[in-house]
Length: 307
Length: 272
Image (cartoon, one colour):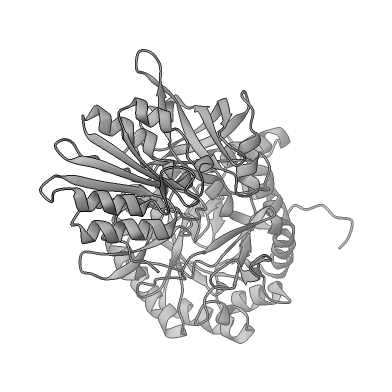
């Protein structure tokens, strides 16, 4: 018998725990030729503001050992064009769509949530309160406990969709932010967004990104992200969606054992746009080898000798 | 356009052209069969995670068997960093993950229009396939090809054997005109009757692309430019490879060169 790969995020049941991460999968349609979007647990689309944004000038990415820095600056088409131009096709393809929303004021998150709550096919809202690459929004909410609570509770009041704040690792205690989000009414939390970082060209003594600093992602951050997911999963009762440097089924399972109910995959799909079937097959293989019938039974099963 | 495939391609040959340039031939029938001039592939240079990302390369040549069946592609590679150094060292029999074909190709012109290709250094990279496509349409082709020195100019016999007229330029004067390749290009443009159909195709350093776009505009010729950008994914996912272009209403904005390019109309590009 095939294992049951379904997982539950609040009221949302995903057919499997694999989700392409926001900012790494465009609006999903870019990849529709190489992956059946309906075969994924969900897709988290690129962060949307109310209006179109241009983003930062290039160079926008730079490679570092086993990782990359990005400072894209949330280039995007804005929510209205997304609803008009992208959602009909995403619906047609059967994608479960988690929309990542960004704002520079709480009222913008609320407005985005209102707009998207009425759009057929939008399955959940991920609140981007953690992008390190823009000054005027995002991370300013994610680095302050009261602001995190305020934005979550404001969005909670205007939507019935699952609300999933995406947390930044650029704080001292991520778990306290997870708790603040839970108390404010979040249905789940996702983590981690990228680590604020920089790279310098020593020949020219100039930063290698136009924005000077950027967000570090990729396998280089995975052990830190696993620790943060473990901390958060022990601190809250709501589901945790884990991410950070996942490149294989083994990596995904590491996050799930640490306590993640589902996982997002970002940088690895730049390297291998066909990674999704490999991840799912690897998880199925693991479950079969260990005689586990439901992937949900793997969640939070870390065995330690310590309390 | 055909959907991209990821091929675990065998290296059939690695020819060193000079201290820093090589040509890799990769067995990739599924890519060779559909690739068009100007399209590119993303090649993984290491099995592990360092370097992590793939590198983009124009399809240089589509190789065909005697019965004309495409079986391989070649890429022109310049050694720049860690990733390209690995490709420089690749041996026949090695295998490389090669994703493609990606991006929008050149639009080819047919006779009586002529095609003038302008290449700077490794910017020769998309022009063997383009020459083949143009030649099969019966189009007359000239290649304006510049480098720092004569050691930066490759495949001259290849192009000559296909009836491509060569105009060479080197910055040190060791071959062809002394100076930039845009000098003989402008000379030729000014000598060409305005009534004769002509399209410019260019690939090379950004200052050269801008100069070609400017010349094309001044002489009232269409130009198609193959841009080079740092690319993370080649599929439109990462938004790293943007080029600023003007839309139909004249507004400038960033578009992804992997999806909207890498070939752009020279009049549309807004230079930083």
